[in-house]
Length: 337
Length: 300
Ligand SMILES: Nc1ncnc2c1ncn2[C@@H]1O[C@H](COP(=O)(O)OP(=O)(O)O)[C@@H](O)[C@H]1O
Ligand SMILES: [Mg+2]
Image 1 (cartoon, helix red, strand yellow):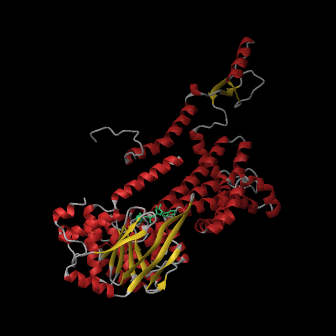
Image 2 (tube, helix red, strand yellow; image 1 turned 180 degrees about the vertical axis):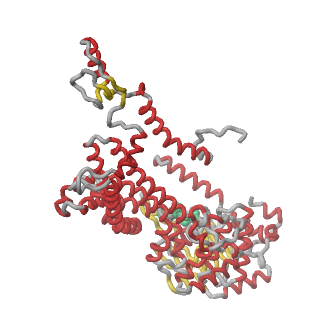
Image 3 (cartoon, protein in one colour; image 1 turned 90 degrees about the vertical axis):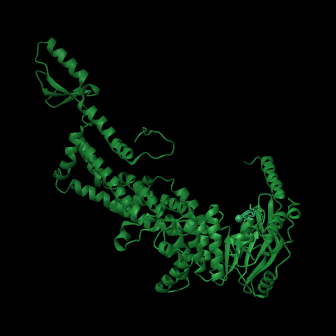
């Protein structure tokens, strides 16, 4: 490159190399900040962890105390001629260092539950995934068709959307007690919370997306003899499918955000239960590990869905999908007039 | 403008050479495919009902190539969309082969100015769309689609997606897709309006070739007078506000058509006549009127 590429160009993409660099940086910057706060003492480290108690009667080994308290106590003891405490500056227990959390990411999975009958960490994770999965699937089974019908038929839209619009302002958690009363204390009320949290948004979002259909395609199909059923299934749905797919990815993210609410409804379960439990034991590295696992599952699912979508909807930029490339070979042709 | 014909000493556009006259007489003997009778279109607006089309009547004969021209906003698209039943008819009637139309159908194929190929289907599948609706087997549909792609010269591109084609190629596929249904009439609403001049000229030649090759009646909207004269047997001139038939002009240019005829006396005299009919000056004042109205109502 002869000229230096500019960093800020209105509405223009950077080179792929720079884009990749920035993606890496978006993860590296928080990590560097976290490491700096964790490993460079003078940045924060507001507490002291005692390694030798000396003559003090107030504290034990491994206690964490404010640096001011530590200095005051030692000053008193030195003046009184006693042996002062020894300790190192640390961050509060709720701010574990990267290596501790990394270790917990592994150890959380292999640490036996404290009490008999309590789930392992991976069982808690699986439980959470199950609740979100069923809530989202059930919501989609009803929400997607209703949304599409609302988007296509004004009658449907006017009949359902005003109420849905109203209902979606009830925060899903307010139905917790009701759901438990109706559905019992097992997973059903939890699935119901995810359902309520997702369904009403889903109807509106899918309806709006369906309405963005390029109507000239519908008209073209009509002049080719297509009747309403075919217009819906062969024109409207295929044409908005990439956008619907994108909506579903975003909605799945919302469903995840209702998980934490759903899991404290009735009996506490899943990752939330694990997080609360670990916070009680003050095992904060496990808390962070569990939060990170949630993030990994979310991001991982979305990336996989994104990759599948790029293949399914390759036609959007006139590409042939990897799936279809498996089945037939194309003659390479250059476009002319 | 008015004294140009005198200077050039052009004949009247009404003078027809014997072969042209014979051809047009024969055309007018052909059965009427489309009969538009006292067509009225009104749109509700804020200031009340606005009449866009007023008592528009005309006939289109079998195998005819008819163009519709007129100042922009005079209702050309509305007329053709009403024929396709994409707009409701306020009053009047449109007969196709003698029966009134009431809903869109494959007997009236349409090509739009906007590219309307289905982007998720390959070129081939696009052309097969109507064939499959008509109940043809996949095998027959594929075979016929390939024949039509061959006619528009795009057979090698059958497996590509629309996004991979140029605008002109997309419109050729759209023509093939509409023709594959064997419609009684092909409705074209400024189909080449979005193309560059060179591609446009090629497409006009293609369209004439196709029209000569197969048994099809074409109604063609354009705002390009050269295009109208070059392609048509007759040109329907509409006037604006409300849209009414100004004149149905018979084109005295002989067949087969070729670009050499653009400078022939009969071509020029017809074009000049059409230009006078459309009154570009009147259109401008109409535009000014709209601007004044918008300013007065505080819009825009
Ligand atoms: N759906 C509609 N509602 C109200 N007015 C319309 C509608 N469609 C078209 N019109 C008006 O009808 C007139 C004719 O439009 P159109 O047939 O598109 O003109 P043309 O194709 O000759 O340029 C225009 O003034 C336009 O504003
Ligand atoms: Mg128009």
